[in-house]
Figure 1: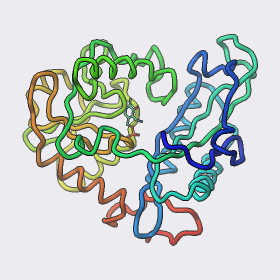
Figure 2 (figure 1 turned 60 degrees about the vertical axis):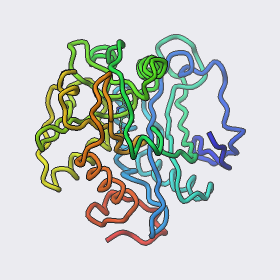
Figure 3 (figure 1 turned 90 degrees about the horizontal axis):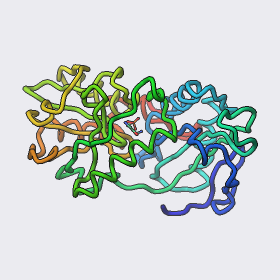
Figure 4 (figure 1 turned 135 degrees about the vertical axis):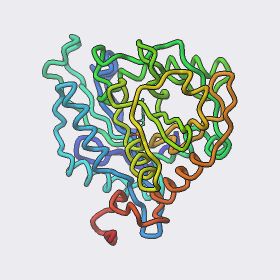
Length: 308
Ligand code: PMP
């Protein structure tokens, strides 16, 4: 991670090196935190944060599911994000807000431990690699199951859940694959370790429904809207592993991964298809401000010229 100048912590900007926590922090022991991943893109009108308000609203929703009360409103966190971006001065970066139970008692119940709220930012290139964006990646169906909805509410982007993702992606990497695909306990396709998943078949687009223990992906929602607008039917439905093997195309979406083609699933070669590349192009034109079709999703600080 490239270190930048400042980190926003509990209402103020602190030097990067000073944004430390005590080893007795509740979230370190029990994964009791919620977080977001957001991208800021360089556009001709200045740095634009993609769907910032939606991400911060999801942060608040995640916290509600953990009965955690973030001491800053969505609007305050939005202002804080722009304050941090301006302090660090990069036209393009990744933003990582996180709220977690801090230092106090170490009983599992977080009790009255203070809630720490932090926003970091740093430069982060293509999550699954530039080559992956162009030529696709390989993914392995994991032997680890996705956490069920009655284990941890998966609609919460909670830090502790990511041990499940870490196990899956590590297993896939050790076997020589770039990414993991997780199935639910019932055998339905859920998602990647940090991405939503889509199948293209016969000119239609399929993706697991929100009831499939998946995160309410903001890129997923973006791509569904873009695809429908282009004219593709999008069906949110149950998918099983053979739907992946028989697909015309498979791709993953995420703030970090953007729209990444899957050129292979397990030992089945799928290649990179035209629908995926069309949606990837439309997505990148949207986030980078090269198209004004979805201008309302690009958010600028109040001082920058507002989008029409
Ligand atoms: N699923 C999982 C498990 C994730 O971690 C992420 C990344 N936040 C996504 C999907 C994609 O979500 P989004 O498009 O909102 O970044």
